[in-house]
Figure 1 (spheres, chains in turn brown, orange):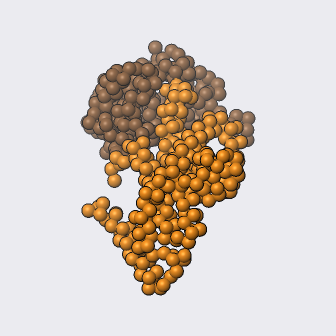
Figure 2: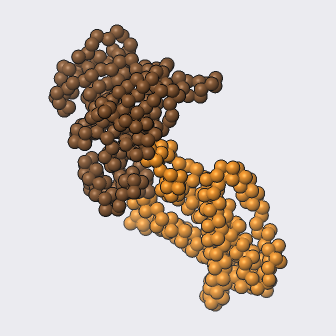
Figure 3: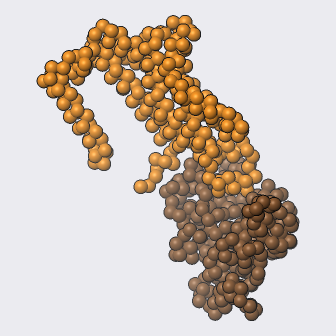
Length: 259
Length: 254
């Protein structure tokens, strides 16, 4: 079963008004279970809109979104996905641990269970010793790691990420990329990752989906088959081939098959 | 060291001001009905300490009951208004009118509405004055919700009630306390000044007017000092509560 199935999806904002915008036009996308897919494209290409449609934060104009065999709405109600945004969006009045516990709390888990699972997630993102801190006491990168731990807390089969590393410096960014890959491999989570960065998309993904604007649509889907995902991978010829392929697809120049 | 640097300047300025005041009044032979010397006021304060204490206790009780009543009403009204938008649109102009009304002017009317032995009029005046700043600030706090928090709670399929309790209320606390800080001083002022217009005469307000009527100006000033201290106690207590209610703000790393 596919993790996400999007078929002939169209999203029009302000429909019927003079400021009508076609954000997405007739998009089809399938994400297999355990697959890591990046959405990349220029501003206004609808990549965030597509992610928000999968998350059921907005409703499609036409077409359907299926998450793990269920409608997007049903999947959201079951917390079938975890989500992280560009801003960490932590609750400043809750400690780090309590922030990670929140989705578990809303699922009605007992106090002990909550604490055990949240602690485990903090361990996973390497912030176990900061459990009692408040978000304001952490750096931006640490806050983002807490947000990722929170997204993973319910052990969702699907992880949705909207430029989660966009506001971080390059070094923190690369470290978190490696951490994320480790976590996804460990938990078997399928991931949809929205990004602006070509290198980030190629390094992280099994497949890079390239989108273009006005109207937002998918123009290319480039598979990436790196042997490993480490420093060596960032220097490998295949990595650079894929970066070039994505760049060409973004520019709209005719594409020769990348793989 | 840091503490001393924060406390020392205002203390030094205060002492210098009092010394200057004393010198100006004695050397300038200023009549006591214009301005008594600090030493005379202090003398009266020591002599009348039992009376000042009792009057401050009476006024303080009135202010506290008014403050609690007005604040609870303000927070509840703000919660209802933030939940039901039409209610906010109706209640905001009403609250503005209530605020524009010189509440102190209501005191004589309220005093006549109840028996002269009732403490209720002064408490009502304090409560009404407290209501507005608490209501407005709380409403602002309840409305200012981080869009990301809103979306997150939506992805958790949280109910409206859960959202209110877990996100809206804690998020509005800084605003609630901004309102309470303003309200705490206002409550004391209202409780003291309401006595100028009749009603039960056992608080600081009536002591100030009666001392002034007997041309005992240093004594009047001694009660004014009592009122000032009472206002400070209220303000500082509110600050302390704020710290206790929002520990995440005090543990900030600079």
